[in-house]
Image 1 (cartoon, rainbow, N blue to C red):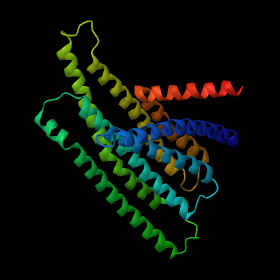
Image 2 (image 1 turned 90 degrees about the horizontal axis):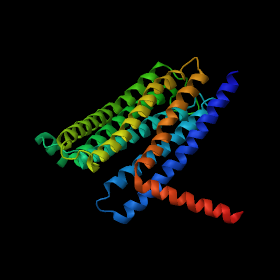
Image 3 (image 1 turned 180 degrees about the vertical axis):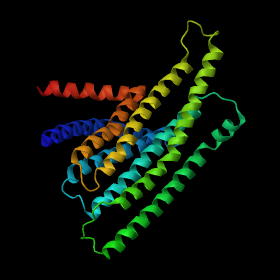
Image 4 (image 1 turned 90 degrees about the vertical axis):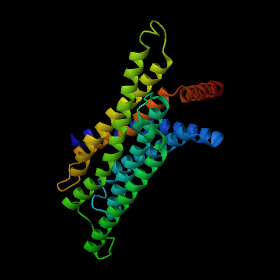
Length: 298
């Protein structure tokens, strides 16, 4: 029975991987081409490129974990893979936060002095916080590696059973997600306040007519809410994935939690594509060409 459940979960995980592979691949190509063409002033393309690249790496790490964990449960290199997974996950969250800040900067219409001051310094503050968190993560990783080295006296062939210290270090590394997630929530809140004020202000003047700015607000908020739901599922499932790897190992819990986690990088790429008319049109053109090629081949 357990083998059948694990097989079914692996099929779902592979399907999620393929969806994300196509979605993130399209975003990487589109954003890279757009960034090369514009170069100057193409911060949106650069953010999407970083986000899609991190999501692609995250998907690969989840699949590698699902495939190799039953075989190499106590390998030193497997622990390194887990640490790299956390770092990539945080980088992905940072780029999603950058995207939220980009939307907030471009769409929100708030005249508060504090907001205007932060708006002018968004880029510098964001990059500074990102680099600071990266340095803190590197210090934690160095400390973890020193502990592992001391335990094995430099012999990397020794097995490393996952124990409570591993859980503690993973929690410490994951705590670095708190800052970008908080910034993401604040920027989303600013967009909601901006939408409410804009709607209240324009209610009388645009009665019965389409409001382009309100439509842009709503489209962005839909994308951010979908990201928030997927990320919360990822965050809730993550501790189960970590604790299930401690002795005694529960493969079923590992597979269930990581299959849920895999929905975050794969489905959000689809949401980004459907929410961006230019990317959506590019995908439609590619599909039409692919269909023509298939028909001509027949």
